[in-house]
Image (cartoon, rainbow, N blue to C red; front, side):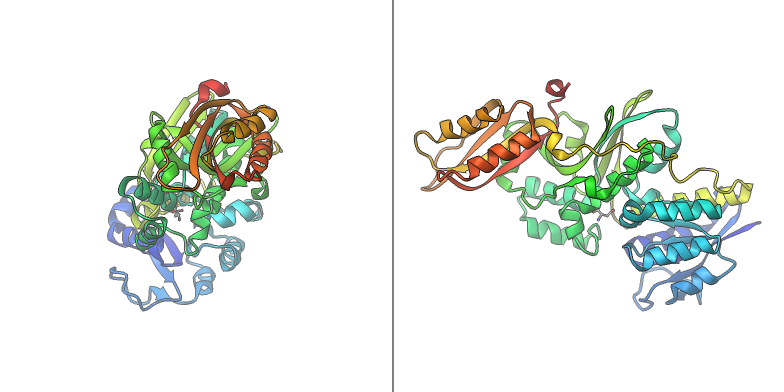
Length: 436
Ligand code: HSE
């Protein structure tokens, strides 16, 4: 039987899961590939921790460059993450003519062009199913299943940590800090969880998926990114009263002359399929011109779900090696356009505002006056009863308005002496009827 040899670099949470699948299901995978898929090396600086897997002697080494330098290795799996040594290792592996499987969304979103270019010149594959949505086959869906479509839009919950935190606050009343600590303990969060909670990780994923879908380069610097650190239990409670859930959304749309790519918390109607995505689960809704909307759903983070996606890439490449059809699938659709990303100022959507205001005559009219002056039409106003002295929350839901007007109006409102704290602004994504 032909052999396909694999070297894994970075044996953390996901790497351990990949080793488990490759070692414990070696026969199953080999029979599915039609070749013996052999994990020849695992490189990690930490060779001491017991990963609960019985590795053959001499598999585990510290030196990643030894793996890349081994002429027997066909496929390098890069699971170190980040943009420093991982990039060097991937480029070196490509230079040596090895195929690469990676889950490194930060690297691909920010410097993918250089990597894909190098791979294409060398005629090798760079596969990255695990870089977005954990076990959800979103990359394969875009590259293969929807190949006959023009992708019109994607909306996703793409960060398991944020979705887990928002769920724990909403359903169990946990504090943000405790919920984040639990996400870290469960192995969802990035080494630097700022990337999760500030929206950077989601932005990496949606930028990558947008480039893949529209064949246009997305510069991460043009993507509006807002995380979940400003979301409070009070806003979650209000959302609930209006029939909404708050989710960190990745939103991407192909417009006529531009594309929209943005990441921020949003209120979505409870009827929206994404509203019932809980915990570390992820989901992506993709709308193709032929298919209409499809929704993919599954675990977006964690050891075995993400390992499953990595192994699917290994198997794809191994099958191509066996059939002699190497690089059968290009890493991405060809870059066919240079559509700019729509500046967030030009966004038109519905809004939720929560003002922290003095509870006295005339306050509401001052707020409404400023909103009116900027052409922002209020749909409804809600005020909770006064529980103690001091400011009260006044919530307004708006008809569609322009982001630039909203920002100017709120900044003016926040400078009023009857306003106690910065106004909370949450975009509402579910009132599609108004937007169309
Ligand atoms: N930190 C990421 C998440 C891991 O929470 O979704 C998967 O990319």
